[in-house]
Amino acid sequence: PIELSTIRLNIRNLGIPVFYYGGMKDSFIPPALIRETAEKLDIPFVLFENSGHEGFYSEPLLRLNL
Image (cartoon, rainbow, N blue to C red):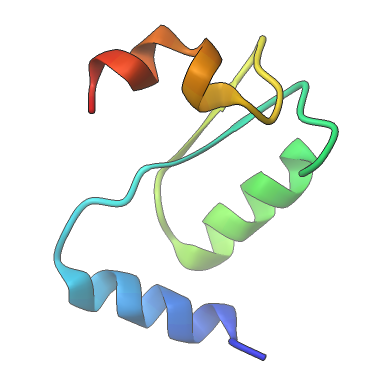
């Protein structure tokens, strides 16, 4: 299995921004897991209050900032 420490190192070596997000109403990936993973990867993240798992489609902020 791939370790989070390896992913963290690879993200840093990419030298490009990574946007990690989730929805507070996600029934597939719990918000607590999104937060925990982001903290372990040491990357910024956003939890959208009114989104589920389909945040890319329901959040105007994501669609406008591609």
